[in-house]
Image 1: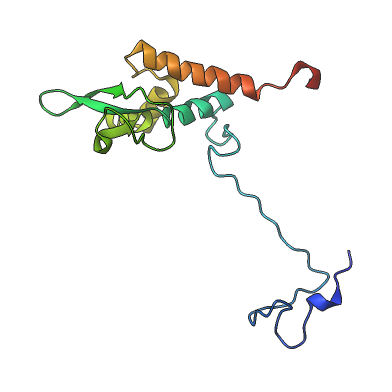
Image 2: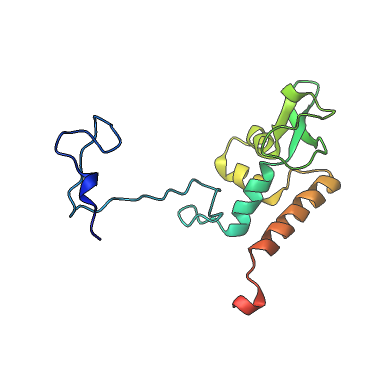
Length: 155
């Protein structure tokens, strides 16, 4: 590919007027880097041996907001969903006090200090006591998994 000569300047000023411009030699290709931030493009992780479904489950657990339930001594013993739509941000309109909102993930991290136990609880939804909440989480999971399937004619 031939680069137009007007893109190069001998006076140290770019065609757009930037004085810090350094012309590239025609033989040097430009480097283009694509980055994938965890759980944004690809839901699986081969390094952590995480399947697509496990990645989606972790994402779902970040979308459900609730409050922590504590015993008399102040120890966290449960999590109650605020019954708002799944959202990346805390719900603005809720019966739950905004300062006391936690995602299911943050609740699991408060319940377990070991990362392995946190991952198991997050991915399995095993600390969700309310059947309605679990059903909503599973509904979102089923929908996401269906949307990831290729149509039969594509296979």
